[in-house]
Length: 457
Image (tube, rainbow, N blue to C red; front, side, top):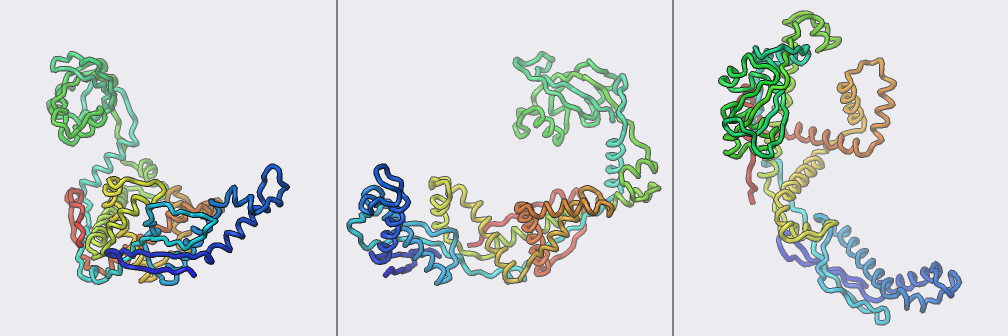
């Protein structure tokens, strides 16, 4: 009879030994030989008439090894189920040498495996003592003004004046690397870019006033743009923005086109274009609507920030012991593509992070019976589609058939389910921690540090 024994070999790391004797696998080996002799196609023999001895001679070793290993696997899996062992991934074989299988001398074989055991841990205790901030971003008049200007320009008509005269001029410019005198560098590549005049530093704006298509000037990058703009320009030119030498480079700029966008007037026609079907007739109502939309955007950003803080707190501060060494070995051997010890070592921190989150989120979802019903999922998909296409009730029929097709796509359903259950999980976690509200400006919000802890072990 097969026996299975287990011994502890490290933190949350056990060795399982499976012993199988002749009577455990021989009957199956004989059955496999018989089955094979009925189905084998061997020249010189009629199908189904190949003698078992012939089969053993030709394929006996492979069939024998196969049946022994199948028996071992069956015993191992049965044991894991019976003992209700919660393990990570799959058991890893500890046998380094190949066994000497010989069907002429069936023997007793033992196989060693190691498993990593999932730890028990408490999350709710941590949540009870966690304090976190929900930021509320103030929507200023200036933010509304900027958005109005952006929309006026976006919907505006482009004209092509002769010369540069306004900071709102759009310049199409060819960049060629040169020296301070404008001599073109050897092998310099032409790069084209469109920029508003006001993106340049004040001194360069002055220099460009009155210029027209075909004119050239020479600039040094750090003097032509402020730090933030320089980063974008450097990227467009294929340079490293972080390199101190980048700002020192000279470029010859050739103006190929001068444009000017005429801003749209703030009138009913414009309001209708931006918000169709909303019946906005006054500048005040338009500003109010924009304020509300900007507020929605920042509210979502603030929620994302809060969730990120909660995620980091849970992952890094929940005291979870993991069988680190086993998991590194599993990363090496357990996947489809074996890895070197060094690759596994490098991948481990990310893997550890993900694993902790999986353990914590699974436990909270299970312990608190959080779920997403198919109806909720369908409603979510419906809302997304109507929001995306901006549809009303008249397309209901088209929408229903589109929805049905969408909900047959396993990948889509799985992804939507994950998003929704994660959202539910965060909403639930939010009710268990101490949340304080704080009002701040958009500038302050953007500069907030991202919470990042180190694991407690």
